[in-house]
Amino acid sequence: MFNINAEIKKLPSKPGVYIMKDKNDTIIYVGKAVSLKNRVSQYFRKTNKTNRIKKMVSLIDHFEYIVTDSEAEALILECNLIKKNMPKFNVLLKDDKTYPYIKIDIKSDYPNIFYTRNIKNDGAKYFGPYANPGAAKEMINFIKERFQIRQCKTFKSNKRACLNYHIKKCLAPCVNYVSKEEYKRQIEQIIMLLEGRTENIIKQLEKEMKLKSEEQNYEQAAILRNKINAIKTFSEKQKVSNINEKTIDVIGMYKNEIEVCIEIFFVRNSKMIGREHYFLNNMSDESLQTILSDFVKQYYLQKKEIPSKIMLQEEIEDKEIVEQLLTQNAGKKVEFKTPQKGEKLRFVEMAINNAKITLENKTKEKQDMILHLKQALNLEKLPKKIECYDISNLSGDYIVAGMCTAINGTIKKNLNKRFKIKTIFTQDDPRCLEEVVTRRLKHSIKDSTGEFGELPDVIFADGGITQIKAIKRAIEKYNLLIPVFGMVKDDTHSTRDLIDENRMVIKLTEEQMNFITRLQDEVHKIAIEYNRKLREKEATKSKLDNIKGIGIKRKQELLKTFGSIEGIKKANIEEITKINGINTELARKIKEKLD
Image 1 (tube, one colour):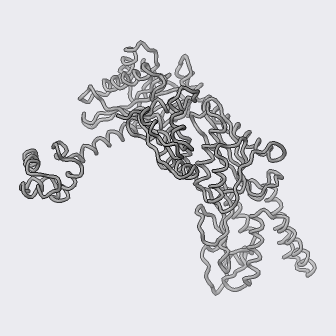
Image 2 (image 1 turned 90 degrees about the vertical axis):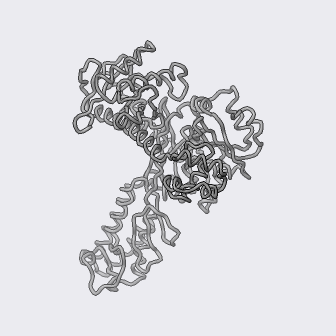
Image 3 (image 1 turned 180 degrees about the vertical axis):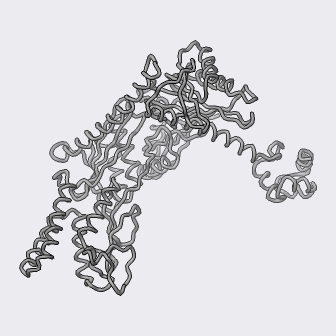
């Protein structure tokens, strides 16, 4: 039995990582500490905690820890363990994006330009990241349209030039119509463009245009003039600020009572080349500093390309250590800045404002959908918490139930639940539903802060009127008033209608119907996968599992030696005793059980 108070006393006052686990031995939280003893003990003191931490602590059954040599090592290990185990009470960046870059193979005699998501140590030049893949592709298309570099993916010598040469989109290096020096001058101009040095390239092109005019080569001068105008237009289109910093990320955050939105602007060479946002749940009562700190560590410690400066609205925890680690990873000095005035502050405020707008738009869409669903279902209160149930079995065997939950119009997969049916032993979905919902409601009545949380505002059943009545019986046992509806499928097993307890079909909009369909698909998937898992587990069981004295290792050794259960049956006692750890008495017992 794990005694938390006794184990806390054993903790060393050294840096390291602590791993909180629930009764199922599932990792629910990973944290780092300068002093493991001080940090872990704080969780179990009667101090002010956020709702997220309170709930996490209530689920802790036991913990483990790893001592490290330094706080920096602990920070790296913490991030690696979070990424690997995805604990539900940590800040999780589930959509681990790989952003596109523009690549120029400058080591080639006649370099080309590529769109890529993989950065390699191959001597090529990479420009980015571009949060919007379309922006990277647009830039490549612009370059290939305005600069006469080769369009072919692989370069080889030819006897004649391709069509791109004849329509003035390539200098045809494949037939030696251009020298390496002249071709590389084009590449140098492209690099200047990608680095944001548009003034330099425009001056250079204007000089060339003037020279061509003086030589009365008006056709080439016109081509250069058009290129200059295109670069000016494209440059202005990209530019968002006269901020002096060349390579920075700007991070702004906004939160409401439901979610947090973090917005990142990617600024390269004083131009914003893209942006990205992330939504974080169950963090609304955490401090800005805590959220930003957790986000920044996860986001940047795994990245290869890191800007020189990262602008934040508030200073993060462990700032010096994170800067030190990022500097090592990037091979250049990386700093976090919290601007207090001027153009840099305005840019951070712009990121915050964009995060606010993004979150408000998302929240409004969900709120509108929930409000309209309330009206369609004729409910007394908003259906902020919706629970769905489905039963799965195979000819009356392996009977299980799945439960999925939607909070404020969003399906929360971390709240998915699975149930084994305990009292029904035949194929009877309504009675199974009654059992499951009775058990589930008991959890919230006993403890509304537990893993099931508050009672649902409405319940949807996968099925029709008999399933609705079964759930109503469970609800009535506790004298509760929770509306119940049935999700009815058609002959093709697709969601057809939502009905009430009077068999009335609820008229829903396309958006609401899509939402109901997603719920039904999710809960069906939970139940089916659990049923399949139990069947597969049963299929892998062996007759050896029920023999006292035969553990996993001896079972594996027996099957490895004799090939199968039938092989063991055919073996004599003397042969069986040759297995390490099996004496004559145990061998005789094995023979008796198998025969």
